[in-house]
Length: 106
Image 1 (cartoon, rainbow, N blue to C red):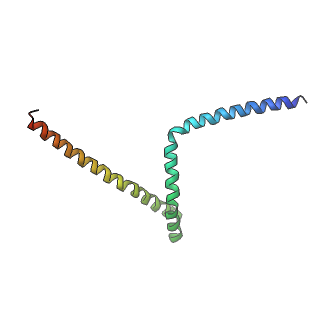
Image 2: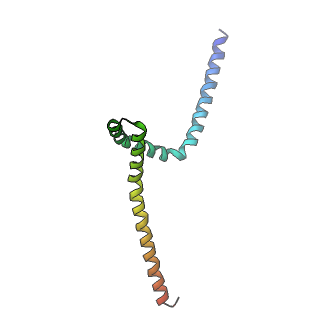
Image 3: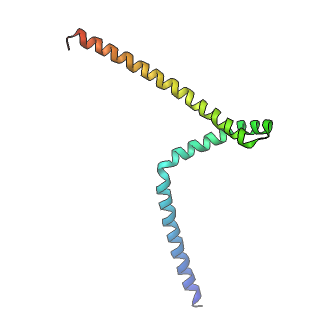
């Protein structure tokens, strides 16, 4: 009967240490949750493309390379368009402000 209270105390201590460890892991992962979520979404949405390419070519490495490059192009294309548009607008704003400043003597 002496072993039962010691085992219970050990189990409580273990559960407390486990709770502390889980809390610390949560604190470490919190800054990366958005990136982890985005990776999961991209992985799930890109899998059908990979599966179709792999069925067609029967080469998993090539299918994963092409699927990865296609997903990167689908993300980078609109981002490059957005960056180019913002740069153009910033340049026209700079020219308008420069012309206005020049015409007001400043």
